[in-house]
Image (cartoon, rainbow, N blue to C red):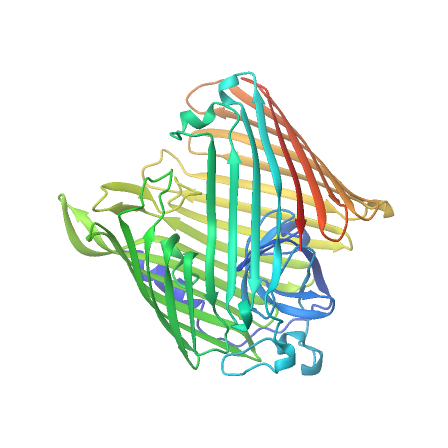
Length: 531
């Protein structure tokens, strides 16, 4: 509770306007869309290419601006962004760029064509009816180990479809699902009674144009205003008045294998959002929400959700969110008490084109669900994390060369010691004009109960203008602090992507894992069509 005001101040600080810092950063960083959903876009560039969370990306297709996105997560050579505003749906192959330089004259700014609250677009700029995009295909995932109980063989079919301006109504229909058949015996060990399973990740009908005075979403959705509730079956409706957006949502929980919730779980929330675009402040938005989860009408959890994002010119951006539970357990009884359960805050800064840096914090606290009597970490990805600090800096001393250093520090009171990592990597583009991309990285790991390191080497090459080949070799070694025995794992990876035509593509990848205890092989195949 003592930390609560501090973290709330951090989150709210990301929505306070300040004078933007000037920068002389000519030239864009260009990348390509590798996959897209209604709200998220995946790119083929990451931290090693100069991309960081908080970057604002402009998407285009054949000189037509599609919209803007803000980068929310990055890997070494890939990233994912959340759409801020769009006139047409993004799809595989679309181009994107991050421009870090002085603001161009208004007539040269493609972003000026994007819809802004209170301003309607000319009719000739509106998309045609039933603009369909997406991809469909078949996949195969397999794993073979010396212990046959770990073997997996799953052929599957998938579809992601996005239809813009359905029947000319301005609504958007999204469908994302996967059907797979488990040929191994693994399905019985995880509680499934049949080999075949059909998963619907999204089935949503929505209208959410920034220049409309109202909007809604219905189906299997995840609200971008109250993302702390996760995915649920239901709907939300909201009304805009100037820069403010107010709305409510209601739905039922989805049965999940991990938590076993759903069916009798009901989610409800009310939220207020504020958004502003200004010449000296590229994007500025914040949301405050009150959310409740009930089971059979009885309270399971109630909390406040806050999120904010700001970009101050081309050189500085920040975003954050926090969840504050309104109840807690004391002496076996539920009491009214404010308790921070989740917090995230990132700052990204680009003082020069050859230098970029980011600093972040994330923390989790266990969430007690009163009715279902479950005590779960408020994160599915870092279940043991309590307080984590992250720092990263990338230097580009010469064209085609980037050097990155990163550090993390994680702590919680119940652990015997704190954990931290130190890492460094170097990336070479178009080595000696051969078209090869090469990279190497080293990470030193000090965990709560182990010490270790990880070394990786990568070699990538574009072939014939349509194919991409990646080779990777990784060595991971560690020893437990409680025993003297050391463990070592080597992974040899090969990936191959091929564009057969403008609409058909194929992917193949495999890993050979050499482990001290048991060797194994993994393979992934995909054949699909995008449109």
